[in-house]
Image 1 (cartoon, rainbow, N blue to C red):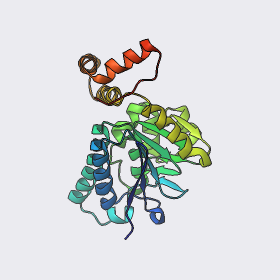
Image 2: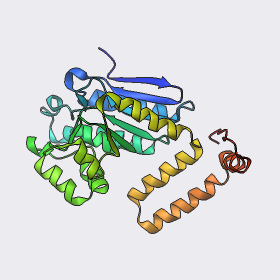
Image 3: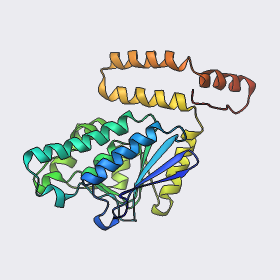
Image 4: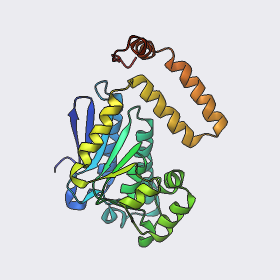
Length: 259
């Protein structure tokens, strides 16, 4: 059986591919488990600075959760399946490296939720995004009802979830669901270019900035500001802060250590 998750390294950039093209890269229990393990491993890897997540083939990023697997699940098993998706989203949030989604086709249901759990989303002009769970008698189970309204607002989230109808890439860009739309044949190249801009920055600062951004989704403003102030103090103790400021004064490119 081929690996359901493939990881390719390019310098400090990890490209993680969901590899079930015959099933439009649908998320089953095995994929959820292996993807969580991959993200956790890459988070700890000293030679990784950013992660791109995409799907195999040119039809789907991830077309959804595996309905064939879900069809036979009991209520308790459905809850456990949702918990597996929750663990993956939590692992992505806890990862101290930025995660960029290269959405190369259908991102529906669990696939849309996987993209929502990423930090940045770049879409092919052929992409379709949606939460069609109600059309098969269920609801989003991997975070869609929580992350989608935080990203696009309650109105658009309600319309997408209540109707189950997908939206095209240009609409997704207009409502803020994706950062930008690029031609399909340039998707990975454009996503890698953005990732390399991130890799040019201080790893210590990026990790703390991601922590602050994630905190903003979970905390009231006053608590989030407290978190940011504390993180600002932490970053002030790093070698990267000293190096970055010296390089600015000396008009040279900084040499980051991530410490």
